[in-house]
Image 1 (cartoon, rainbow, N blue to C red):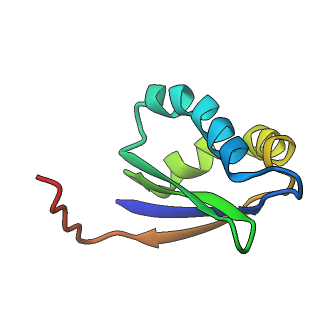
Image 2 (image 1 turned 45 degrees about the horizontal axis):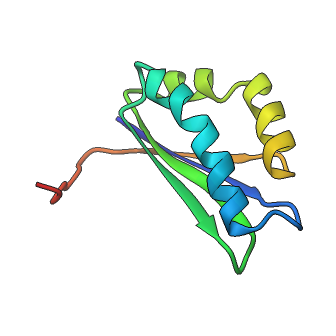
Length: 97
């Protein structure tokens, strides 16, 4: 498994409610992505940072989902180009139930 962390700076003038609304518009596409294991949306109002934490079966799946076309859409939606970090995920603890 691979954990991918995506970050971008939210443009001035986009408040928390609008960020969440924009996040929600992207949810159906991620739910339809059969390779995506899990996604967490991230937002820090103080630093104006947004992004996501994704769990993928491999790095190729992550990179395929976050291609140049996706980066262009994210930049238009949030106001900046995203950055990416990848980590091997050898163990997971899930206490959700």
